[in-house]
Image (cartoon, one colour):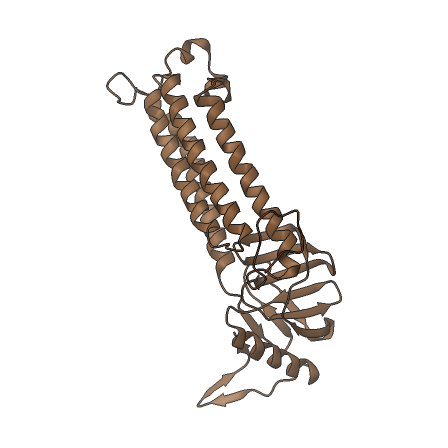
Length: 293
């Protein structure tokens, strides 16, 4: 049990995180912890030290409108929101340090729900929007439509992106080449493929350049130490991985089931060695033109 990068203060069991992923895990751990501390710091600044100018929207109001805002109550609400989300991020960071990455998705969901709650709850402290009885003033509803709509659309977009990224990679073997479906997918022609390999580990990932990362699922363009810019369609927790080197870059993908990944590798390798030729299989009156995984 141990850790190659001693800058990470939490010991990571070797069976949990491979040596290649150690630096990445440590950096993610500290990023979440630091962001969590920033959240808590903002909460203290607004709630305890009364730095109300940090509250978005309030700081741009005229003095007349500021006078109608219960800034003390709003500061308490903002403080609670920041404390709780900061604590959640710190917990996610600590879990990352132990190689447990499953806490990220619940944290994102909690952040989304708490943000919507904050926006709804904050209205009762704004006397420009609600009256003394807590009812919306005339014309106030129109003021809320645009910001609320933007938040809702943003969360829907993020949710859809997370769902797509978390799906297992679908691969179709065509006469033209290997087709990877979905976001960032394309067809890799047989004559453009130089090598096909099956490996147990991923290259060292330096950063994401244009892609999505949800937990162990990585899709899109990433920069690596060994191979430079690559395109990934992988779940890091389920090796092995299929490496296809093309004329432009290396593409790495896998299935969530290791057996399916190995079978897919054998099928792609056989088709490549045969020049991409394929003899259709006749099942009853149906011709099967491709292999889909």
